[in-house]
Length: 248
Ligand code: ADP
Image (cartoon, rainbow, N blue to C red):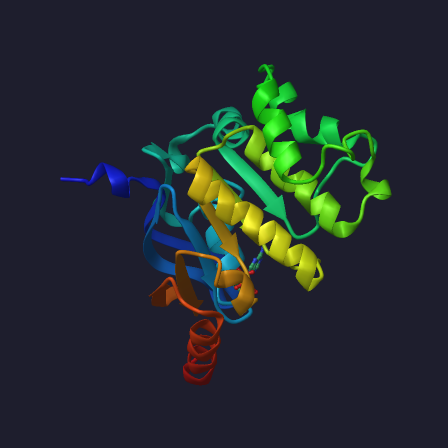
């Protein structure tokens, strides 16, 4: 029996991703089985080229599996048509990228509600106010991205992901372009979203400090999961990384 507390928000079954063909083929993901449990914060780590981004992109429907399958809830992404995939990404997933990915001509408020507006849905005003207040954006809502600091822009991207209440938020190096104060802010925003709002968060990071905010850290090497830690400290993560880099 599946414990309802342990429901997977997303999972992969025998996921393999090969880029290219013949002699130049690269196996970026090699037969991975993984579950991302609902209401957990997971960090994916590993040396450069170990397959972190590919895994996240396959999980989030931004890239396709060569074999095996990825699921959001119980929806098998490989069985979706392009239009259905676009709708699923829009309706059920949130994204936070290293480069913020805000629309420069729109205000912070317009950026935050953009996915909901595109979906033709109504913005939950009370929730919008709570999220923007909590993220310290209430007085910045009329600003365009160029008028905001990097940390503020990433908080707008977090608000955009949170306001839509997605099943799962994927972050691809979400703190990669931020100073340590802004990184800590963004990470505690994600931590609160998990603890307080029941959100599910999966990030790729190479920063042990960032990963230490997670409930669970998964380590990749050569396209496979080679290690996993629960509630680790930054020091444990650092020494695990050093060990993995020595071995691989
Ligand atoms: P990481 O995020 O851990 O740095 P990636 O998932 O970006 O690793 O890459 C894993 C492997 O797949 C690397 O060897 C990389 O060169 C290769 N790779 C990634 N994307 C592509 C692509 N679009 N075409 C060819 N090879 C790719």
